[in-house]
Every structure is written in structure tokens, then in C-alpha cells.
Image (cartoon, rainbow, N blue to C red; front, top):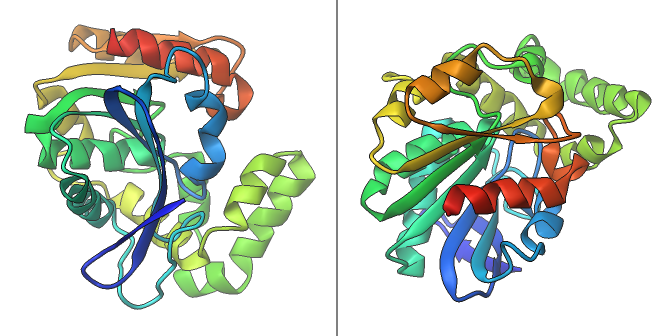
Length: 254
């Protein structure tokens, strides 16, 4: 695992897997970590020739978890990712973002759009208001979530058998999880959806088959966005069907 020190001396940690084809940067969802979610996905033959960057966002996974020097907003996650890719001195990128990571990916792509060859999202947040889990997290005050909401969420995951997300949550800072959720609910102006539609790059949106039907399916296609479906999977498709997710990403690259 490699390190990149941000201007505020916080350390971003990531895997940089070699390959001769255009790099793909993977951005994970709330309470997750790319180092946990995507190793099996990126090992599949369709992606193995790409350089693959698996980033653990600040507050998650193996990256630093500051309590005073970072606000955990979607916009500021995107800002330091711009600093990070500038440090890597790569002229072209494919960006993949899942769930909350999709919102981060959209703002990140907007900041570096001249370098983005493709933007691939899987069940990403496109609008303000959040999703089921971010709304649940944000229903607590920050102090209550840190005091007892975090442990309640972890116990719920364990009791429901969602042990993979429980493992990821246990390596995330409670403050970060809560502030990420609040930022998702707040959204941005223009919306992530509007920015996504406006970006002049190849765009794909991926669903797990268990998440369908979804009213956005036709809406996205009407905006000339390629839609892919990963069979036998729901929202957590990287865990549920990594091989088919890798194939969907590869088809999106062309």
C-alpha cells in the first residue's frame, strides 16, 4: 500500500496495481474502503492490463482519520483526489465510483474533466436527500451517532448477516461516516445529476439486477448514458458478483 500526504499532512493510502492500459481509479461508498471492496474485481482478466488505483478515502480503510483538519464533505473528498492525481502525473483517467463514491467521482471528474476518458458509476448518489443508509445515519445527531449510533449500526449489520459492511464500518471513523451522510443529504448545486449529464466524456451507470426496477433506468438512457446490469447482485455488487462487475466495467471502457 502506498501513501500520499495532503497539504494538511493527512495521509491518503491506496493500492497502485501496475498495467499498461489507461489507469482506472476506484472510489468506494460510505463506510467502505476500496482496499476491501475491489481487489477481486480488479484481478479479473478484463481489467488486469489496466493500471488500477484503489483509494481509501480519508476517514475510511487504511487512510488517516482526522477529527479536526477535515470536514468530510463530498466536495472536499473530490478536491484532494484532484491533488492526488496531479501528483501521479497521469494525463488520462477512467473514474469508477460506487454509491457515495459516485457523488465524489462526479465532482472529481468535473474538476479534472480534460483528463477523464470515462466516468463509470454504480448505483451512485445523483441527487440530494441521500439513500436508505445515509438517511438512517443522519437521523442521529453527530454526537449521538458517535456515542451510540455507530455501535447500533454495526450491531444491526452483524445481526442481519451483512458482515462485510460491518467489517468495513469497523475501519471507518464514526465522525466521517456521519458527516459523509450529512453531505450526501445536503447535495450540491448544481446537482450531481446535472453535472453528470453535462460532462463531455463516456458515461456508464451500473445497476445490480436485484435493485431493479428503478425509475432512473430509462431517464439515464434518455441522456445518452450507457446502462449496464450486473446479474445476481444488488447494491453491494463488488462483493456479490465481482466477476460480472468487472465485465460491466470493461464493456464500459470499450
